[in-house]
Length: 451
Ligand code: UD1
Ligand code: CA
Image 1 (cartoon, helix red, strand yellow):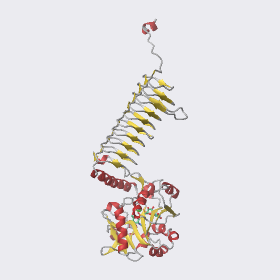
Image 2 (tube, rainbow, N blue to C red; image 1 turned 180 degrees about the vertical axis):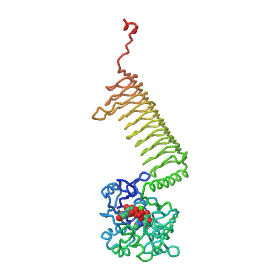
Image 3 (spheres, rainbow, N blue to C red; image 1 turned 45 degrees about the vertical axis):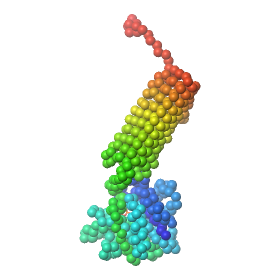
Image 4 (cartoon, rainbow, N blue to C red; image 1 turned 45 degrees about the horizontal axis):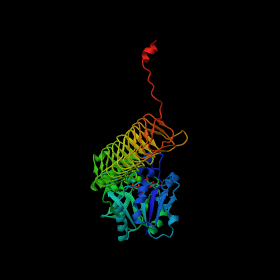
């Protein structure tokens, strides 16, 4: 049985931010959320987050994660002090405690499984995750007897110059037998450079402590400042792109592309340069996205193309061509084999199959049927200054260039709207509507006005 505790009470001074450190995002999810979800497959009996600095914000940011418990550390006197706060909550508990740092977001599940397995197999009192870093700056150093029995842990600020040369570092991830740790915790002292109660001091006072080296040192990167956040992002991006490349996705100039971990791509998708895929986005096979596009929380069907465009919170069906320079947002739904082209914005708008909006249009709160042709410059006036209204357009209807459809308004099937019309009233099926003043031509004008 294992209880997981996540250290997330610190301010993160080195981030130089109003936002608590653990709420900074990495690839679309906060640091602490990443840490929490990474332990889910271990099925911990309890997950306890230790919060302190701006705890209300931190808790609110995690409200959607079920069965989390929060313990307050009202003053942040160090990682040992943070774990001391668990004492009243884990009274009588006899199992293992897995401690994770809320600012170490790249750990792999296999690493945690291996740590816990080693802990149990060797009947250790504590087992800690370590790594050899070519640049160990900022990390606590770990000194072992032989290969893996931990003798001493020294924070960098407390190291002698000689100790600082040791490049085996503490990842900040630990497995403890809780009853043994609980006995030590009340006796921690803060006589060190930072005047803090260190969890690392407790580690070396329990019984047998073993160090387990992480396979890939990049996993244990701790985020203390924005430079490390950027480095972590880089590592994460490389992992994500490697996965999709090997799954049959083409990334043209991968370094110029960013992809959130939450995105799903099918084989034979092509992502062109300077394209960014975010949130819960799904792109089906044969689609070509980019160059220069942003897709966020959207579903794109097979063989869709998107060129220099922005698509957020929207759905696009198979074979549709978006762009260049289109903007779909606010739950736009575009049918199959449509064209949404140059400088077109769709907001909360549904289009049927084989409908085209090719140039310079805004359609907001609009439902249009299939095989509709929206002429260049057609605008739905959906806002009367107070409320938004809907426009409905039937199948096969065609609007002339520069038409304004003033909502609420309904155009039936097979309607023709004359160019330059301002349509304020409903139009029945199979009609031509002309809603503009007639052209007036006055011959000989220049001569007359000179008289
Ligand atoms: C800690 C370790 C160090 C290790 C490094 C790995 C200690 C004393 N040092 O150092 O050996 O190499 O992590 O990344 O543990 N926190 C609290 N309450 C506090 C203080 C901190 O909850 O009173 C939380 C922070 O929010 C953070 C985590 O604990 O998520 C680590 O704290 P931080 O101050 O970043 O420790 P490091 O100096 O990085
Ligand atoms: Ca840290």
